[in-house]
Length: 181
Image (cartoon, rainbow, N blue to C red; front, side, top):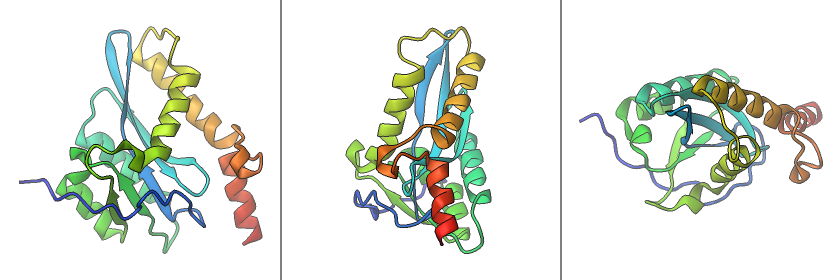
């Protein structure tokens, strides 16, 4: 079959990262608008909460996750090999996904079955996103919703300050870190 095995939970809820591109987490969330569904598949860097790559689609396909992963991999500098943590969803157990990770030297980690706390930071991001732009809003079409999601992620990365980052946005925090390095 084209399904690989579930990876072990290497992350073990160690949500702190010492540097960018050390620990990444990913998941998929679903929205509805205008009688259709929209799926968002992002990668979040645990160093600063930045969404380093994301893709949206009307169906939660293998292709959606592959496009997201490729964007994430393209963002890496030479020698950067983050741990990539997800749940045990079928997307992350497809052999081609697992071999793409292995080819680039990334280690795969997975939550224990049905344990959403193992990926709490990603769940938390989805919570903020839905609270701030989705709940109590009426989008007429998935295109309108998709634009709002893309705008929000750009805002999240570049403008939305986090107290845990000393009042900086994720991008500002990473930039300061890289300057200091």
